[in-house]
Length: 314
Image (cartoon, rainbow, N blue to C red; front, side, top):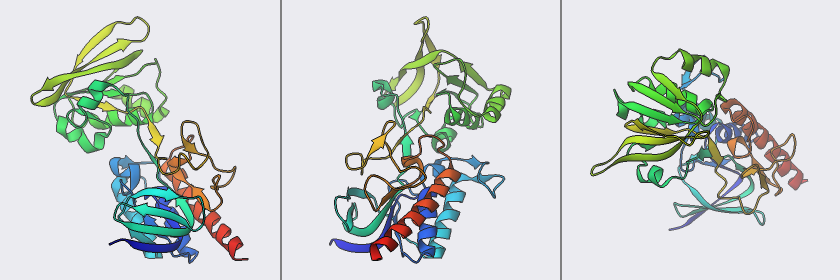
């Protein structure tokens, strides 16, 4: 049986942006409903040590998200474990449909759906997903104790994954298409000091190789971008860490986007191209992509929504 729920503010997504929006919207007495989505807690639930969130010298990512959820609930935010599959922003009140069968109507919407891991798009990558190919070291790293592992990428994510995997692997090979990493200096320093990590410069991943029965990875083939030379590297696990793409499926055809799908917001604001719809966190942030900036934007979105609703009542 379908159910319809109405709220002044519907928050879609449950990372730092969503939960912070829940705190501020609750404090503004807007009685928000937050729908968690497909990955409650967002990307931080697949992160281990977080060392750059103010107030915590070091905290586990999942623990931080539990604290944020508890904070939002304590303020009065109603948190629902549902997935929004359709969002109509053509008229107010806005209408969202959940996989549970519930229809949510709202006077304002805060989008905080975040981003998801990018993949290379190789047939062999797809074939071995979940059977040796992963985009989450913290989810799957312990399966490769004492094994050789490959990580693909050159930014913060790739270096963090490589460092984390040395807790399990006998050797980690980092494959990067350039000759320098884009990661923060502190991470690069740690990588350079780690004897378990070897970096293969100017190479791209061409193919993942393995067995069919049982399905499992046995190695990779890389290609030198300068010479075209192919190299075979034996490994049991392949971790793709080439960044993230905004989770914009609900709004890519209705809101203005740029930079590969990030939702456009007005300068100094979280307002989107549709009045009453606000965007915060990695869905709109193609520059910083940090937990603390996402939380800040969640605060902004709630305050912007409060101001918008007050103007409608005038």
